[in-house]
Amino acid sequence: MNTGRQGSVPNTKLPNPTTWWQTGIIYEIYLRSFQDTTGNGIGDINGVRKRLDYLKWLGIDILWMTPPYKSPQVEFGYDTADYLAIDPVSGTLADFEALLMEAHQRDMRVVLDIAPNHTSDQHEWFQDSRSSRDSRHRDWYIWKDAGPDGGPPNNWVSAFGGGSAWELDPATGQYYYHAFLKEQPDLNWQNPEVAKAIFNCFRFWLDKGVDGFRIDVMWHLVKDTRFRDNPPNPNFDPKTEPSNNVLQEVYSADRPEVIDLVVRMRDVLKEYEGDRLMIGELYQSGARLVDFYGPDGRGAQLPHNQQLLLQPWDAPKIRDAAEKYLGSLPDDFWPNWVLSNHDKPRIATRSGSQAQARVAMMLLLTLRGTPTMYYGDELGMENAEILPDELRDPFEKLDPGKGQGRDPQRTPMQWNADSNAGFTTGKPWLPVADNSQQLNMETLKNDPASMLNFTKRLIELRRKQPALSMGDHRLVITDVQGPVIAYSREYESEKFLIALNLSSTPATFPLPTGCNQATVILSTLEQDTSPTHDKQVSLRGNEGLILKCD
Ligand code: NOJ
Image 1: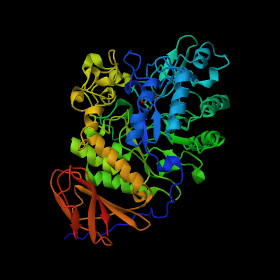
Image 2: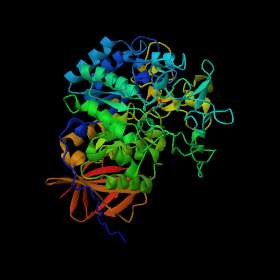
Image 3: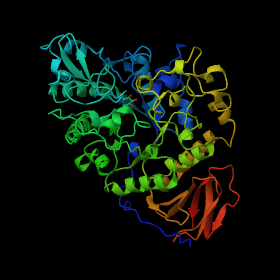
Image 4: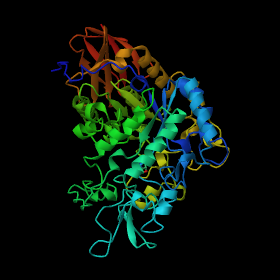
């Protein structure tokens, strides 16, 4: 029996958003792949400037830009050699200042990605640190003697490749710790001078007017002071999982003390006007993710919620993850949602079809909270095929065949049907996807029925109808819940029903209590055949609907 009961989710007392990072839409720009302006095949800051009008047209409010700082680019900017300089491959400081000004002129914000857990081994701090055991910066990194067996100090493994995370440095005969590549030594956040130095780097950019930071691997910053061995992971599946999952990250990361550090970081942002934003890169869930908001919300305003990205595209799993997340948030904390990022496969690929990519976009943009989308998702860009000799990601080279290589989701933005998709006049650092002739911004912009124009309409609707971004969220339980996710959004007298069919089979369910008749406002398919739904909602296969309830 179809009952159309309404489930209740304890999210009705959340404050209504008043600030830019609550009402805005975040767009991640993977800088190397967005727009090249020099012909060297690598995206740059001036490329972002060139595309600001496009982003404004689309309806984006907040740009999250991957690290532009000086770097040997072994890890494409996540290996910082100088936090206070722009890498020549990305442009100049003047380019960055111009970007900031031009974005602000358009009422857009710029959030900088920054990796304070580790530097490049080329950073002068590390160069000094490794030079002798009593160098000024020795203790800025994590140095240890060999373990009792003459090998690495403990069993911690690197996230890239799963080998020991300790590297023996012959110059001084000690090991240094690197959670990622050996070219990315971890900073020692137990040393107060490290905090002081990094906080000053934050201030350098905040003084220039950046609107906030995305803190890379926030949960990694603090390690066990006793450096105890991590326990084995009993559920490890070597066939599918990256090799580092062989151990549980109990002592090497996600220490309880990290929250205190997150609060201290946020305090630096609070020295500035304008409600500067701290986003935390996190993959935690439930109560542990909530911890990163800090006591009384004094931590990250947006600890990234990656649940939509970690689940397979399966209605019960997505629905449960979303509802658990919303249910776990205390009243005062603002939710956020990430659909794709540069570390995980693209949504158009994960969801299995272009039609489902639209359904996913409708989900992202109608959930309560701040959405983060990834460049090219508005076009339905898919993971591209990368030939073995075109692989660039060090992760893939170190841990091949686990489906974890990240190049396929980092291919150049598809701007037009020209060769190299209008991304570069040179040779792109990663190949352009094969479908760029058809699937590109200019072609899609001219097609009113395209994914791009659909995304734009969705954003416009979200902006016009506060219920969709800030309204109360209530799950609608239906007996067709297998492939369907349905929820209502309500604000003042406006009530909307969102119904998403994650399968290709049509589905029907009764209108929930309090909704006698529903009129279609937007469908993911070209047009809805029955704009008014009486007593029940009928979804075509692969259809998502936004309906207004009367
Ligand atoms: C998280 C970043 O998102 C990822 O791309 C990078 O590889 C690691 N941090 C290490 O810096």
